[in-house]
Length: 300
Image (tube, rainbow, N blue to C red; front, side, top):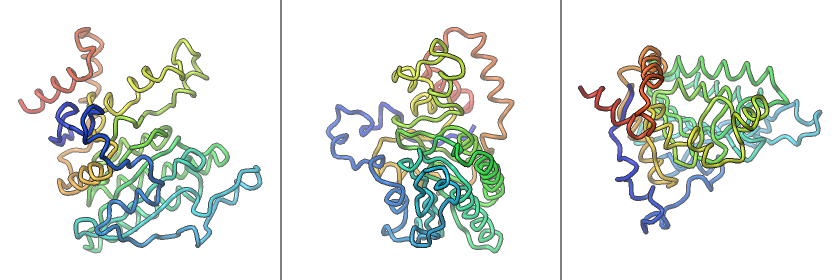
């Protein structure tokens, strides 16, 4: 399994609200998509591609009485990270819940395709995706689905050359088709505030009823979809605090590690085996015990 030997939850002081460092941190979640993207570049200097002044916006929202955004809620920036070329794509969770439409999806997939083209020419270009999204934009349903498929194909192509790192940090989380894209990433970095899953709580409650999933039960929601749970069960590689420096450092560490020996999406047999073990082992109710057990197995 892809694993980075980062600090554990207990050792990471800025994850502990009782520690003075917690209050001194600079929140990453409170930044907008453009500010988040800039954080990763050397000297916070980068060039934005198809920015708001280019006015490449969705042609479908206005006819449905939804005000479009000039960048369609997708920020694409290119610059240097640790001296190497890199592209960072950030979805704006404050616009339509970070939902993916025709334009934002095309911007994201094209950015990945251009990075792949650079790598094919011998110009190493890393990629970081900052995903705050509820998934496909309902007003552009089929177009959003097509875009999601293109993004996943682009990730698979690019990760043959450089690691694709996904960061899920904010309270919007990452759901729907883009959660599948996260599953294809080389490395995934999350905060404990973030959520990651195929279907969001409201969707599950609507389809299966409140007895199946109470979308107002916050403790339950984060126990199922939250960053700590996803880290302990091995679905992400790094759990970090909501701190700009920590998230940037963790993401740069992922890039420095290079391509993993095997991507998580290629380890279907391993995860099926773990699910089968959970069905027969009642003592593994604590997610932290799961990670400790599975980590020991990997090191054996």
